[in-house]
Length: 508
Image (cartoon, rainbow, N blue to C red):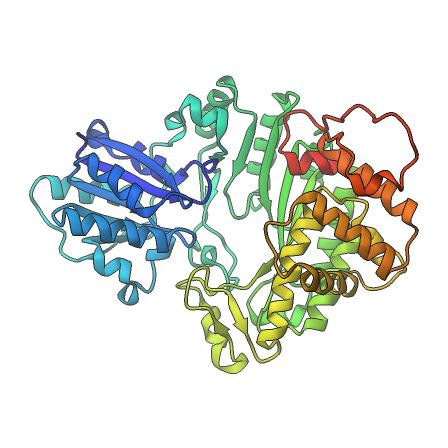
């Protein structure tokens, strides 16, 4: 039986915990006395507790995040009822701030705040030797990469075959955006390139095709980001896919040249714009050059095959619904393949709370701590925007309605206004924002475009059918059959082989 069990509840099975693998890699002599046990939030807490108790370990370390804190609290409560002597150590961003008020902290023996890669091993060694830390809450110093063992060899063959492979070239963020936890980790630390390249090569040799970099500012150091892109470009094979989070106004010529060399769909850039309102940006201490952002996005859409995932936030202090609408419309004109309409969250430890009184910010007290209302957006308006965000992901982002979506504003009206009207109509018809089958959603969109917007039935049917086939589908929905010419069903398109499904649909 292992002395130490490292565990967490991932959001989905396909998400392999990067944090647990870092902890395991840096356990030193305790590694052979330890194991990783991963679960996901769809599993019952009591069943998770059963599996963990069966390990009969002395220490269980839990990775606690915004998506799993509720279920993790249940798991720990059950474990402590059955075996109160088991030592529970918590770590992760959700328990690194405001620890005094959290029920999960009261259940645990110890909490390590910050980056626990080295501190967790130190605490475990002390406990297993019969010692005890001086305090329950133990702050961890920020480690340098020169001190760390990298975790990539701990990805199993099963991980490589079925799960997202996370990697990093750096930690930290130099920016001070008040809504973001990364703004609290000011020092940016870089993995030595030769070391990183060696691990990336081994992953490639083991057959990894999709890499997701978790760096918050991948293109902050241009020389490093250029070297990594060149590394992948030289080794590119069909089906390779690389995800990076980019600073949106930082794309100099030396990066542009290498980016243009990748085939369509090989690169995905997540670009956090969050707001196009300079006054709101200043209020939350987000510094960015909006003209340069526009120029960079036009370059990416016009001269590269990069898949752009752009972020906007609803509910920021000082942002009216008209201001958000103007930013959304501005972004639509720049044609990113995806726009994530995120709802502002009050993450523990972030300085966004300084605006609570002035802007009457009211947040849900339960995870994920989303804004309920503020001085400029009442609760009813926020609910409409919440539905807008969900339906936009189903329609605008999914790749199932690439050409059909644009028909909603084909008369030249505001894309935001047009989609909000569709969103409210859809909610009135369905009363829900989830569990709407794709064909049912197609049928409702067809009805709305034909009956409410008076668009041509044949045009709508043809566009919907073409979009439907992007996913490789050939089963023509029944409601379309009377509106399409009789012709043999075309062979299903396979899209871009090997790419994630959503990104592949945007390419067809």
